[in-house]
Figure 1 (cartoon, rainbow, N blue to C red):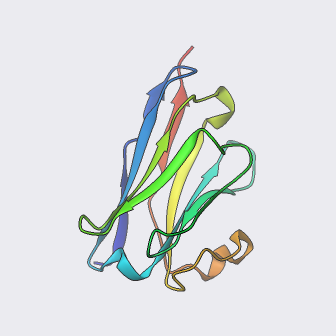
Figure 2 (figure 1 turned 180 degrees about the vertical axis):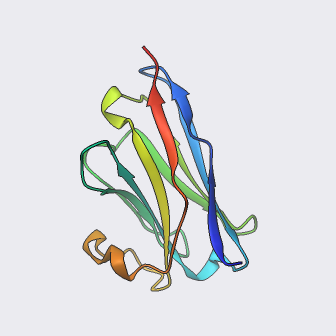
Amino acid sequence: QLQLVQSGGGLVQPGGSLRLSCAASGFTLNYYAIHWFRQAPGKEREGVSCITSSGSYRNYAGSVKGRFTISRDNAKNTVYLQMNSLKPEDTAVYYCAADRRSLCSSWERRNEYDYWGQGTQVTFSS
């Protein structure tokens, strides 16, 4: 079965860190750009970060720039999102998506992406 399998979400305190993983099953990620999105309760899904298939280019939403880092390990068929200095407004379900175009296309074209992960929850503890 061709799918993206996510892991790494959970409960975190403000200022804490989490690393999300997005692993491909049944296909290789080497030729895909990978995007991370998130969706907070009552809000639309928004783009967070993207990395090209080669890993040579990365981009970030302004709200996470300087705090989040996207990376990939093609040997492990996995992409990561390292999230530091987390804030309560980062609470959301996070999704990864694979785009066969290999470059970071506009997040407006999300309906054209090939695979989506199942989502992983990031929640703040008080």
